[in-house]
Image 1 (cartoon, rainbow, N blue to C red):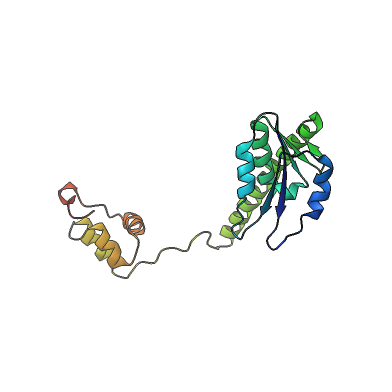
Image 2: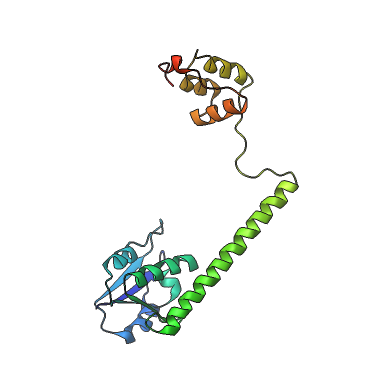
Length: 198
């Protein structure tokens, strides 16, 4: 059974004193992981800590925003810790999964996160529906094709040029060419042209 501390420093932050003040009274840590968040936002020290956890271990963090980036991230980390048979203690928010109340707090947070996710999803769907009703286009703009696109499709469909050539002439990626050609009713040349480069 090991006791681990975890501290996170934001970009250009170097003072761990606020977190240390909360963690120090716990004492007796086998190891303290100090994370300096880089520009890419990766948490290499946290990843290392989670990979080491065994049943009976305890992870201490000064605050929820130190061990996680957001609610979803916090729940993922807490779940990973608990599934390893370890426990999480978050001092500022007074969450301790060793106690029934701590485990209940995690369950409640999971429920509220799911409610929030559904609410945001519903709002997004309503926004998309409203935008479409107003005639606004949603998603990527349509791929433009050259004026002689139909002729290029005919050449490809008859096997006179292969898919790569047709896409190049059209100024499209191959997948976009095939999609646009199919929308116009053109089909790939028959098997007799299978060696033409498609």
